[in-house]
Length: 249
Image (cartoon, rainbow, N blue to C red; front, side, top):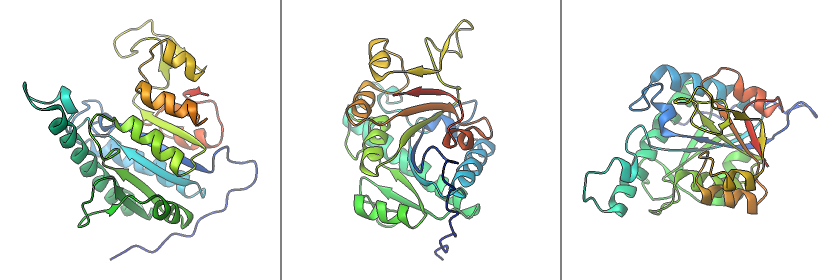
C-alpha cells in the first residue's frame, strides 16, 4: 500500500542554507567499515539523517553507487567485456536503491525510486518533470541506474541529476570528513582542505569525484560538499550552513 505524503515543515527564512539537495551515496558507504555487502546499522543511521533533513522541508534527491555489490571493471573477472561489467554495476545501484527506499519508508519518509533503465515492476522510469513533481510533493527521490549508459560513473550521474532537478548543492556522502591531499585511511600525515575551487580539484587530481563530474559541476556552477555521512548530525549541520567537510565552489 502506498504511504501517504508526510506534512512538510516549511523552513524558516535564514535557518537553512540549502532548500534542495542531491546526495551522492557511494556503494561502499552501504557496506560500512568493510565496504562490501550491507551494514544494517550504518544504513539505518544514514536513513535517520535523511529523515532529519526531510522533516525540515528540504527537497532531497539521491544517487546511489554499487561498490558494495559490484565495482564495474574492478570487480569483473579477467577478459570480461567492459560494457557488460558496467551494466552489472548499473543493476547493483538499483538493488541499493530499493533497499534504501524500504529503510526510508520504515521511517515514514515518502520515497520514490526512478531508474535510468526501465524496470517498471519495481521502479519508475526516470522522467525529469515527474521527478520534479515528486520533489514538489515532499517525496525523496532515489535516482538509480546511473546515467543508463556504460562508461559513465555514478558520480557523473549525480552531477547530471543535480543539474536537472535544480539542486543548490551536490553533497557527496563518504566515510571520511572531507577532501584530503592523500588517502587519510592509509596516510597519517594527510591534510584536509576546508575549501577548494573546481580547478584546484582538477589540477591537483584529488580523487573526490571523477573529472567528468567535477567539470560538469564547474560548468553548471553546482557546489560540491564532501562530508562523512557516518558521523551523526553531519548532514543536518551541512544544510544549515555549518562548517563541515570540504566545500568545492
